[in-house]
Image (cartoon, rainbow, N blue to C red):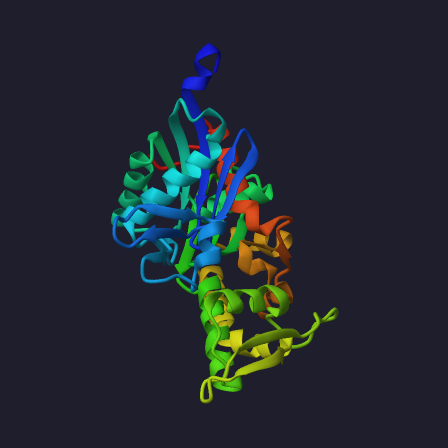
Length: 340
C-alpha cells in the first residue's frame, strides 16, 4: 500500500447478533458482545461490549441496554451505528488524533433482504466506511474453515450463530442452495429460561441462561464425557424466596430438543435440493459446523445420526466466520461473490 497506507485502514467485521469481531492485519483486534448501554435522556453511549453486558439486566431507569441486532439483522439502526463506531474506536485507541478512511468487509446472513442489506451498508458508512463490501455468512464460514470455495466441489456449511442458522452448499465460488432460519443461540437461551421456569419454578435472566448453555448445553442426553451439574441460583416464582438448583446436561438436551429438530429439518431440506454430483462430494467430505452453536456438546453426533453423513466441528467455530471475512478482505479482487 506504500507511503499513504496510514490514510486507509482495512478491517473485516463479523457483525453478529451475540458478538461482534473485528479483524485488522489478520489479527482479531476486537471481540466484544453486540450490546450497548445508552443514557435514556441524551441517547449517548455509556458503555459498549463487555462493559455493557455486565450492566445488562442490572440498570436503573436512567440507563438502558440495547442489543442492536436481532435474528442476525440490524433491529435498531441508531444503536448499531453507535456500536460499530465505538468498536472501531477501540481499534484506533493509540492514534485518536487521526481517523483513517475505512475499507471494510462485513458479513451478513444469506437470507438478508434488500432493506436489511441497505441497513448494514448505511450503518457501516455512517461509522466511517468509505468502501463497504459484504459477504454472506456461510461463504465466510467456509473460507474461514479452510475450504477451497472456488473449486468445482460441493462443500456444506452449517453456521449456527446467535440470531440465525445459515445452511449452504457452496461450489465454484457461489452458493448453490441455502436456507437461513431464525432459530439459533438466542432461541436456545429462551428455551432454557422457559424450561427453568416451567420445570423448577425459578426465574433466570438472559445471562444466567447463557451461562447454563455454555457449561451444560448439550444436544443429546447421553455423552461420553458428561459435564458436572451446573448450580443455578435465583428467586422461586411463587414465594420469591431464593433457591439453588443443580441442572444436568440431560435436562438441557431435553429443553433444546425442539429447536435442534428445526435445524435438522432445515439441513435435510437443503440436502434435498442439492444436485446429485455435489451431494456425493458432501457425502465424502462431510458437513462442517461453525458458529457458537457448534459448541453444543454432542451436536455433531446428533446431526450425523440424522443425515448419515459425517459431521465435523470447525477448529475454531466461534471465529470461523470472522477469519473468513478477514481472508475475503485480503482477496477482494479474487472473490467476485462479494457484494458492493
